[in-house]
Length: 234
Image (cartoon, rainbow, N blue to C red; front, side, top):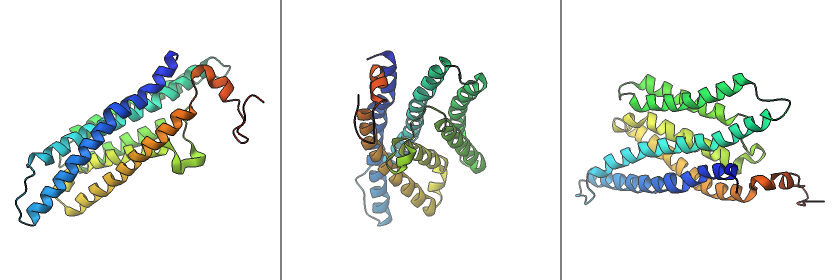
């Protein structure tokens, strides 16, 4: 394996070792928090400690950061690989486009940090930073080199990941509201249930894509195959 192949593996490595364990912990604490709330509403004594709610929130924030970070890593490799590949041809990527892409990566991180730092009453600012970070993420996803599998969007690893990341950002933005409104709490639960299903789909589609992606030295042969007739090398 070359350095390019190892760089390609950073995204799935981080997903398996960081994101998915966090998803399990956040889901567990979410279940515990709901069970405790239902017990208290029924005026029953719960054995679940009050700290589970705080742990759920803290881990949820960490999960959102991890998901956005892994998404950026997953987008960075194919985008900059395409830039390097194009630089060796007669039609390199314009310098202005390269600068714009780099700014978009920084902008996504910066707006997410601002979203974390927004205080509870600042609904407008939280909504603005969530919208800006989401928009920047999708702009990066639209760049050349990113394998989107648009012709099969319903089983696309890219679209599953982008939608799940968007839902995580929205959940972070509406976090203060769930303490003030039962409706917002239901919205929060619904969004995260959908995100959980998408993460499961991520595990399936990610494993599939790893089977389909050849090593760098195999690319000229594999990409020359006839996918319609499932033949290679004549």
